[in-house]
Image (cartoon, rainbow, N blue to C red; front, side):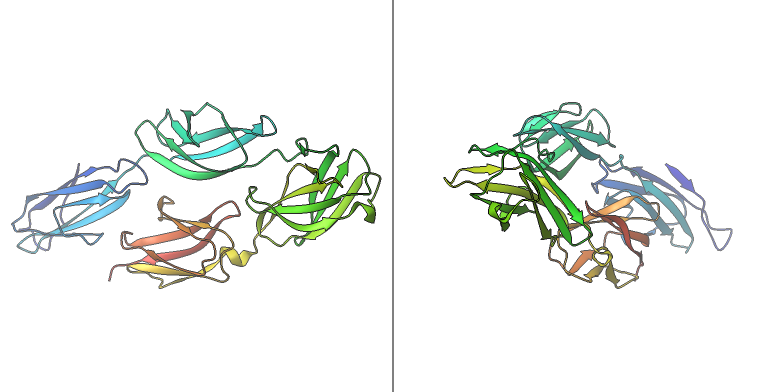
Length: 355
């Protein structure tokens, strides 16, 4: 509860405000509220809140500061600012370690919120210290804290990429496989086999999600290795972000052998992290115009002048223009931050004003 003395034009003004806030249950929910009581003064009273509402109590509030101006029948005014608080945001990352050639040990590292935590991932449940065994691929995981606040995000589980695991259906065996970038545009693929061969064929397989692979090139053993049992192929690195490579060998009888998987990364140029924002200042909504279509899904976090996240927007791959509803933002200065696996960078600052 907060008591605020008035700012009155004459000494006959006697108006005093008392406010009380109900805080948001979770950082990502808008269920807080604030009520104001008027002491002294002359009714009826007019209420004007910084978010545009004009009632004695406002609700459906996210975390932040809210200001009310109360005017009584004599024209006396008083102003009160009250904060709606929320618990700390839950965040989690994951770490991978070798389990076997089919699955990976995944540990969740959880911060924020109120411990203890529970998680669910691919139908498995446990607490924060329980490892998960998952096959390579993408999974949607949910973490819930002790106050029932939760966060859901997608993790990508990578296979072990040190060449130790291979799929062998024939007698042919891979000994090693490496992928190394040559500048920003090329990748050098080198693989070593346990025996030299002059028959069959190698195919280079590529994936951007480590799940679906397609053939992007071939190599014929008879063309000659760089050394006995050592082969190389230089390819164009055309996809931004993660690139996964695997070598497939098919012998003369049609039996196949797969190498381990190697990942290389191609950074986005800076223009992918920039956008024009208009209008600025903003009133109800604003539009992002990207210089080039997004090559992957991008997450934009909006923070207030205190650095607190107040909105999280997921923009689909291929987008070049995107409009965001800002009607719930309070007047003030905001920063748009790009937050994904490619970069974490300030995109632009903007100002929200009332009409």
